[in-house]
View 1 (spheres, one colour):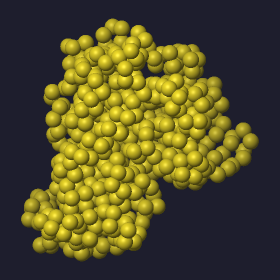
View 2: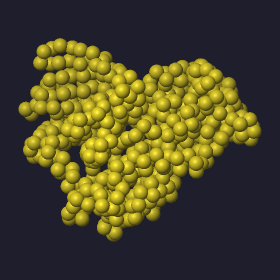
View 3: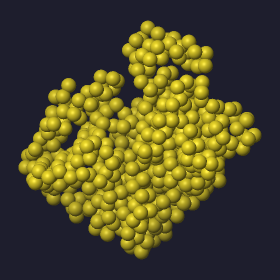
View 4: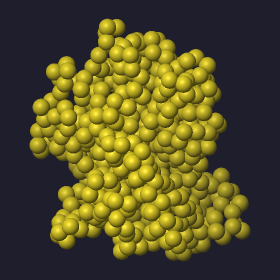
Length: 577
């Protein structure tokens, strides 16, 4: 069926509610909008579903949520009676329709005889991961679009190990979703019927308390002799789910000077203070910096709307706030946590760090210095935690820390996803520890650079929306596969990795080998001085990402090298129409 036929089916089918059909009537003369909404179905990938909220097959709405959940129900049923009995845990964030989407997912599962454990109100994404593990459910669902703009929502599925599902499970669920040819074939029952049949259970304080105790148990230091708990901190949840859990964990750890940005304190799916609620974006700290200067805060921390990611700013000697990127924050956490565990005698002899292939190497160098081995995987915490679980199970390793450059971090074994609550606690603990030694986190970062060299980096995201944008991203990747620079300044290309093809080419020997990492549309170029860059289309947003990493013992030379890499590669990408 063409997109106009699908549009007319939605417009004239009484199965779709009146408000949906009225919304579609409003765009009847906008052919471009109709095409964008109906030219394809919103794809269920390894990140689940994510899209703009609206009527249509290529949008997020109740009908798409219900059908995806029916597909998940079919998948669970195929796993057997034990999985059906174990049920599914469901959480949601503050976005528009998150609560309705989550409840509808629960009622579809219940209609299929699968018990749903639904949180009473919004919760941070990492608590859902904990809940799957704690309750031993067959799967988990989080309704969130993470840090996307307010027009978006999403739907992520977790496996029984508490990590986001990998490609094999996603493909199997996609197949089940595709088998549902009519939305009318999706099963759903009322909330009253689900509860009366013991197929819907509401979760609340008990799970919160258990999760908090687990987080607190991770702490390395707690005494006043080791920590200055009077350190002044400004925190913003960016109108998301972090407000209650982050403030609670810091209060229970005894940090007394935590101020919250009032304008961004309460959950609000409109995110009224910022267009793009992503703490990676320095504009997210505008209100925090004002409050920080007013009260003399030493650090500013921000979590994204579903509280799985965290960003940091630190006050310098001039009273200005310096932004830390994900690799730098990761380096601070790795240094503090791994060195602290080693000092306390609780660092495993088989400890491992897991990071993505587009995350910088500074954390890897620090980890090696304390005897912790680093493993790499594809981007996304589904891969980071999936790799950790697999290595623990098959090789006997102990997962110590996982992170990626896009401000996601985790540690411990009771949450298999990035965790803004754990990260907030550890950053405050680290800041309090180093303050006791007369240092700020900026001082610590500079110490790291002096010891290991100056690691400089740059991330460019080229946003290309719509059908034409998608086609151009594809052309960029294909063109770059055939033609790429063999040298930049004095840096000579020595290795070219194409993860889609699963090949690694050594340009010095002309030998080609297979990569050990699953296939993905990513290109990576490694130079003789350990500088490197990578290209990959985003899996959740309409953009192509360029990651550049250089290092040098001399900071000025590192900066010069970074600029040369940026200019050279950007010119090539922008020339591809």
